[in-house]
Length: 368
Image 1 (tube, rainbow, N blue to C red):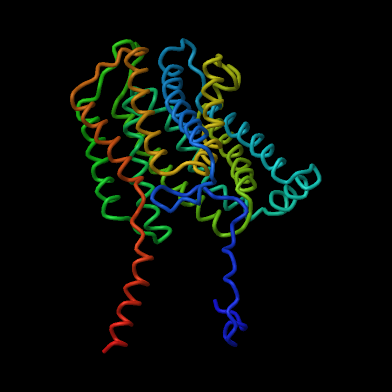
Image 2: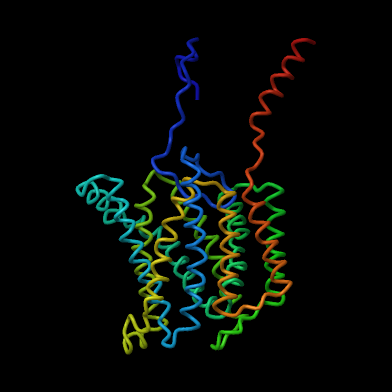
């Protein structure tokens, strides 16, 4: 917009672009916020932690669902995860506001005084709760490496939701990488690698169906949450608190509906071990840590992290569960890793070419 002084002939310096108060987590394929000038060592630290959290969570969850003798209730674990996320978000918001009085004021205005916003955030809460429960079902029936590869279907699912819900477009290379990823996942599932050290009964079709539901939930909820974030200037951590409050209610209802009688009989924390608490800890900090990684790294590094997590999960599955790797699994996992890298490549920016072309065309008209 041109100001009135500019129209009267003056030429003031252009005003700097407004910077949002907090960067939001973009969906895959969208433009990431400008990265702060940090050292390469810190970026490698972010990349390493993100990779280890993703790989360790998958392997540890698989271990607790197949090796532990007294199987815990997965719905209670999802509920506790939401509670821990809530407390972590409140702590980060307290640091962001700077004082206890400002924190209380923010919570009163945005949580207690905004029932409509809580209702709005209950939608992704419900979807995320379903997604997290499906992860337990999937890893109870599929190996960690197979799960890690197949779960990357969340990328094309999120891309499709981004196109439909946010009216964005994908480049030809991104569409190519999406089809390549789907082909890689198909190869992995064609002759799934078998784990020889797992004695519990498994249903691979049930596991794959659970992953399918999980990736659909992940794509829709991620894009929906991004749309809510960009509809106002409300802090990311306030939105997280609103969503986790709804999430606690939703997951408690899930506990009552699915395993209520057994929980009352055996106890809420039945079957919990140090490994189970470790899985809950990883699930709690993993999602919150992703926002830090997005702020300081780029799509290529995040893609490399996902590929590295697949490799680490495969190695751990071979050691812990006796996974027998097949040729189709190796080829499919390789295609998935390449497609993740291609999808994260920056799109070509043609905005700087058009003005020069326009200027040259005007010069040609003047010369004529």
